[in-house]
Length: 455
Image (cartoon, rainbow, N blue to C red; front, side):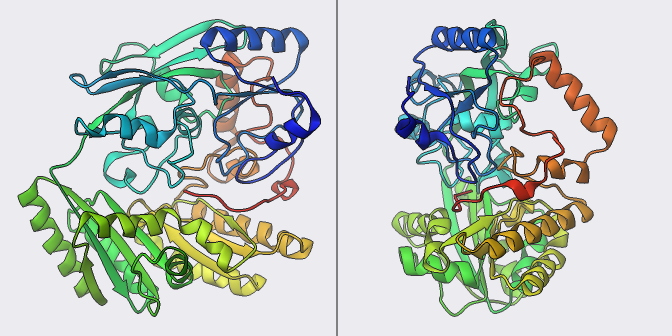
């Protein structure tokens, strides 16, 4: 337990914001420990907030009403690796990348790969239904979680799903994944492991115009090709990345596409040639192939370290997480540029282009309250436009306290009422992670934005 003020200060924020210091921070080592914490909190009528590594970008792990933060940092065991059945059981504090490293030598990996995968935990990935560059072909966290162990608000422990596919009954596993700690505390996770592909090819397509890059994205998928990853970075972001990581990105281009194709060797070669042809037909100045595994890893290191590199441009940035249909990418980027011009803000763009998951990066100085206010207004306008285009207000970062007041943009009053009813079944007293996901009537302008994180 941590109870001294100077220790608790470290747990008042995540990658997005801070609200208040928790009353205490607990570090359980087992499901039994978690059960006792929950029973104590219920008896004393104090909130319980689950926390992984604190890399989240929607305020999901911050305290809104006081209470106990339950940090899963010490529940970090890989409990079972079952290669014949392509499964693993882990505690929630296992770092995402560590699971892939543990099974790499036998030819497997854990697919969901947020840019923070060197730090973020699988429990946090489950809470936020995290994504990453390779979700275009393989899906987000919920597509790779088969079962959960969950401590409920009265201390009971339930198990949902399991190792086998398609268990009968209601899909409680799918319901809990992405619920952001508002339904219970996940203490064990059964995940699907995926065989490494026989061949992987990584391309860098370089463009003089952002518009041409966005049109290429739609053309690739319309051509019946589903790359493992299809990322886009505009000139603002790629120049900062190159200065920081020397990944080989061209400093004089308006945008690049980072494209990865994988599968059987012969099929990969055919798809690479098809992708190169589509890129060139849509005005790519150059299409480069990574010539070695080291060159491929360097290109990806640049992408995954992108947000940290933006410190070279601005002391702070606010990263958004909207989703739109791929065909609307050109219109959306034009709108983002117009928002930046209207508010006098520099906005960079880096996103999972293949599945339309945008990450506009709004640059500002948090020491200037006027700039901060403009950033919040601009971000809300961008999210509203995503909804207008038939998209969503979040693709992988979660709702948390960042976007809960924007939920009516995409859900009707009846939709939200049903969500509340479902939440009350698991969390009737509302003491698991209060103030998250569903609207509370408080505006998002109350956020205290910190620095940007990774996605």
